[in-house]
Image 1 (cartoon, rainbow, N blue to C red):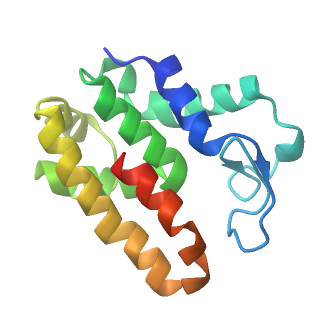
Image 2: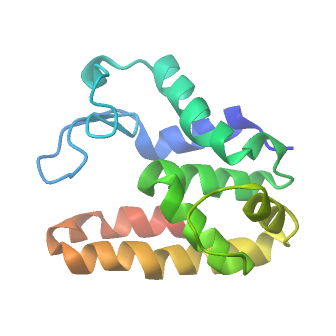
Image 3: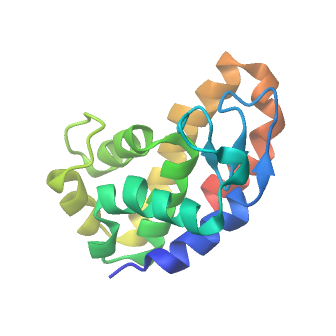
Amino acid sequence: MANFQIAVEKTFIHEGGKVNDPQDPGGCTSYGISQKAYPDFDIPNLTVEQAKAIYYRDYWHKMYLDAMKSQSIAEKLFDLSVLCGIPTVTKSAQRVCGVSVDGIFGPATFNAINNMDPDTFLEHFKTDIWDKHFAEIIADNPVLMKYFHGWNDRVMS
């Protein structure tokens, strides 16, 4: 079964630190947790332990990733959910698995993913989320092109 601690440490490599980029729609961000998403939190003073608690409660647990057979799938679903939200990740996963695309990560989606070959799932999932999400973000807001290489490396790794 998948291990949260391994996954969150990898996500912290991508999301570590505090950032306040005025062009980032999320606003002030610490460890990948934005002020926009958590307006009642003191994001500039967020601790690593608080970030882990949020990640576990609001991402890992909601997607049942403790029960995912493949660590690599769990890590990718978790990491990209942190980056672009559970509904976006879920829709891409649902398209890849051939289940109803509703953006809700429920038992049907979990089981379909959990029963796929990990390499096959990840290959198609990475392509789908890049083509359907990130390419559209950049097309809609070209100033975000500055994130292209980082996003691409993160999605395709």
